[in-house]
Length: 166
Length: 290
Image (cartoon, rainbow over all chains, first blue to last red; front, side, top):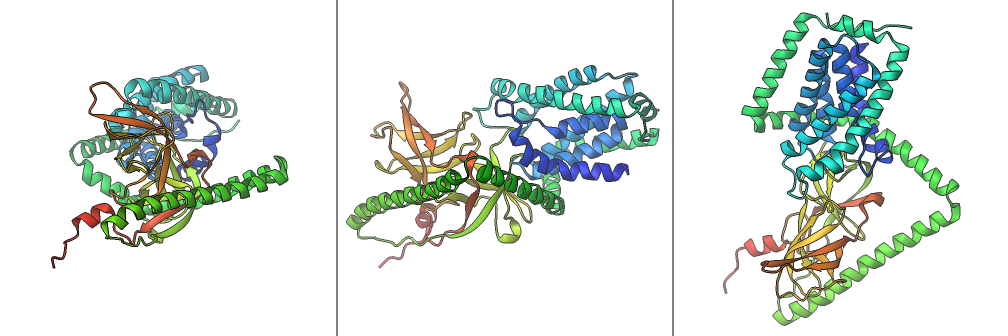
């Protein structure tokens, strides 16, 4: 069941990200559902799931972008792994804390990405922060928070997470 | 309230740690090899993903079509589309005529007239945009199985769209001419001065390395020079809107408005092969001595 769910996420995230999300932009920037999905999976299911799903999601998304495949897979994989480690250290995670966490994490990923991708000199760090990283982090935080809140109201998240951290 | 058991054992943690270390080491020590492995194995994954991608794009296009055709001014939409197509064709004809006139004048004096053959083109439909925010790309529904390869040029009847940077079996990613990471060799049609056209972060383009003595002015058209692979000479890129000349600079540059609005592209043509040699190929050809 879990594998099927991950498969649907990996395959389904590309059409959503490339076809539907360009209509949901903030200052021309769309949210990165990959970051949101990988963070949530890492937090709830642990490092291994976070890492594997992160690598697969990053890989799939990079195949349909000019971004190089390895960087995409490594960034998302690393994010999932770190989210898994962070999830293990937490006893209780409220939607608000998750929103703030996602905001910070997405910002950090947004700062690291242009450096790793070696973009054009026009796309310097200052440009990256104001034009991509911050708007994307805001959108990621809102969407991640909404998904987590939905899960929070439907499932027993605390128990789910504590079981995962055992 | 129902629960899902997503328990992670300590074994899984160890496996995750080992995998993470292996991946990081691979990334640091063998980036090239790992990149080609990911790209190669990504073929089947890309093929699988292209199915839902095409399906979602199809549904999206239908909804957009219904909205455009019935909700938002039924008659006007079709008429407008028809007129835009005609305008694009006329623009292209105009560019070609200007290019032909300039070329005829120049070549006739040199008595080395060469007939430029039309390149072979593949029609493709735009099915998506870049999955990230760092590059300006479009995804088209033709891929490696249709003969599409990286570095091939992509155009519409109005002008240059960009170049192919990545392919899967049934899709290809096109880096737009407005992306700052793209560079195409350009030529000012009137003055014949060459330069490099680069995208800008504002979604426009810029012609760099124009000679200081060039008489380029706003309104001049910029076309491909044929110096780089993928584009034959004479395809419209954009129109100069501003000339930037800095003191003590070796070159001047010009701001361009691209002929093609990347946000409104629905169909494109991929230049599969150019029967006429590019300028680079022509120059590298061995000359027959009498």
